[in-house]
Each structure stands twice: as structure tokens, then as C-alpha cells.
Image (cartoon, rainbow, N blue to C red; front, side):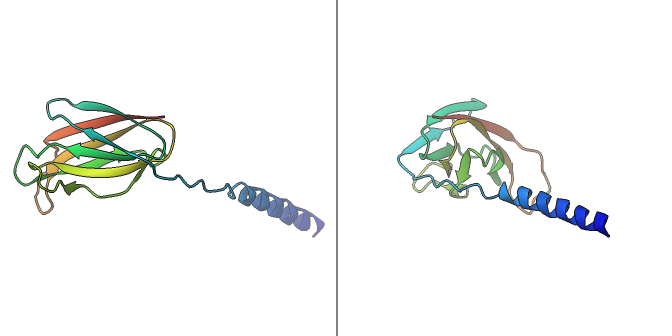
Length: 136
């Protein structure tokens, strides 16, 4: 019985220590400024720079094939918080845009794929684009 109480005490201490590590304060980033990164279609990688707290607007080229749309295939949520979905640019020539907020200093990449719109059988992307972003 004494052994069981000791085991429970050790378990309770371990749980308390594990939970104590979870109380890290949440840092709020105040948005300030905006940076636009425009992807140029023939290139497969585009670079950009932003400051911590900047809104990062990525402008995607018009789809090469009718019935295809851009999708985000990868982005690191530790560096960029997504603010909007991919939407057509108002008054644009078929471009789309998506916005993020830079929330961590460092380097990150956002990858996009041009894929068939929903309800179409083809899954393979027609085009792949990447934005390499440095956040200072």
C-alpha cells in the first residue's frame, strides 16, 4: 500500500511538472505595415522580405488552364498566420491573392499548387510555385 501511495505521488508530481510547462504566455503580435510578394509565372521560386508583424500578401498568377485553382500545399504556421483564403483579385487579370501575418523572425516557405477545381477527377498539379520569405 505504501508503494502505491509513493507511485501516485510521483505520478502527480510528473503531471504537475508537465502542466507547468504548458503555461507559456501567448505573445500577441501587433500588425504593422504590409508587404506584397507577386509570383511571376515562369519562375518556380520567388523571394520576399517582411518585418515581424507585417501583413504578407502573396499574389498568384492567373491559372494556366481553365477550371484550375491555386491551393496552399505547405506553410509553416509558426512563422505565418493565415489571414485569408485564396481569393480572386478584384479588377485583376485573373490573379488570386492570399494574406498572412508574419509572427516569428526567421525564414520560411509557402508552397502553392495549381490543381483541378473540386469535382474533377485529376489530382496532379499543373504548376507548383514557392515563396521563400525572410522575416526580420
